[in-house]
Length: 414
Image (cartoon, rainbow, N blue to C red; front, side):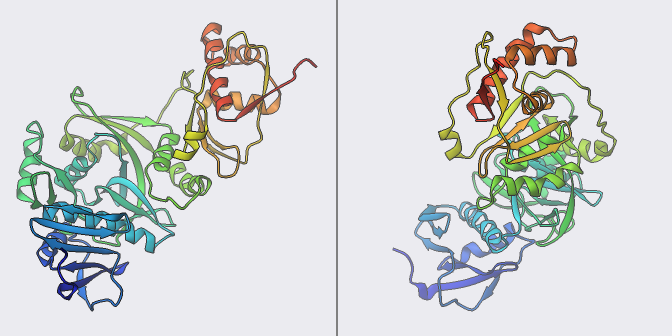
C-alpha cells in the first residue's frame, strides 16, 4: 500500500522546475540534498499534476516511479533510491534542454578546461573522477556532463558515487580523502561530500579540452598517456551519449568540430589517485607525434540495435575472387585527420575508416578494382609490407565493406 497523497511534498530543481514528489518519504530528502550538493532541491507548492518522479516510503524501503521506470522500482536503501532518483533527474534535465547532449563520462577541470573520460567497461570512471577531486581538481560529475550547443561542458552538480568497499590496494592518500569526505552511504555505494571548490555547482560551464580513453590494468606499474587519433574521441562520443532522438549524422556534425580541436589520449593505469596526479601534471607536455604505419584493423561500423540486427555478419572474400568492386555513393562523409567517417544512406550506420580503409574507399570511388589490383597498389604505398599480407587484408576489408553496403560488384571485363 502506498501512503496517502495527503503526505505528499513537491520539490523543484533549477533548470527543471517542480519535478520530484516525496510521499511520506521525507527521510529521503537529506540524502538527496547531500548527494546533489551543487544542485539545490527546494520545496515548492504542491502541483495539481503529479510530477514525473515520485517516491513513496513503504515498510522496509521505498517505491519509485519515473518515465524510465514505467513499472516502478522498490529499493530498501535511502542511498539506493537516491541513486535511482538522481539518474531520473539527470534525464529530466536533458529532456527540458533538448539542445544539450548528455555525455556518459567523468570529468575534471584542469587549467580552466575539462578533461572528459567516457564510460569504459570496468575502467573505474567514478573512482578516477573522485581521485581527481582528491588530487585537488574540481570535478563536473562522474557519470553525466551536459554538452552545450557551444561545445562546453555543463555541470549538473551531482556528487561522485563510489562502489563500496574500496579496494584495499588503493593509494592511502586517496583512502584518507574518502574517509574525510564520506557522504551518504549504504553497503554498496557511497557519495562523497564535496564543497564547491571540488565539485562544480549546477550550471557552471567550461570548454572541453581533452578526451581521455581510460584502461585500468593492475599490471601497469605507473600511469601511461598515449596520443590517439582524433577519431577515437569521436567514436567514444558517438557511443557514450544520451541523445536518443538525434540522428547519427546530426551527432557527427555536432561532435566533429569539438574533437577536431582537442587532443585524445589513452590513459592506462592501475591506481586511480596516481593516475589523476599524473594527468594533471603531464597532460600539457604529452607528445602528439604519430607515425604512418600499415594497420590491420581497417573499418569499424557504429550500429544502432535495429541496424545491427539487419546487417549480416561480415565474411572475408576469397583471395582468388576476380570481381571488380566500386564504392557506393555516400550520403555524408566526414574527414577527421587521417580517418574518414561515412554514412552511405540517410539514417544509416556510421562507418569509421582508418588511413588504409580510407585509401581503399578513395580508390574504389575513382574506379572499379579487384582484390589483386588493390593489393598491388597498396603494397607500393605501404612498403615494406608483404604482398601476401595485403592480399589477405584486402579480402577481409572488402568482405566488411560488402556486408555493410559500402561497395558493390561491377563488370570489369571492359
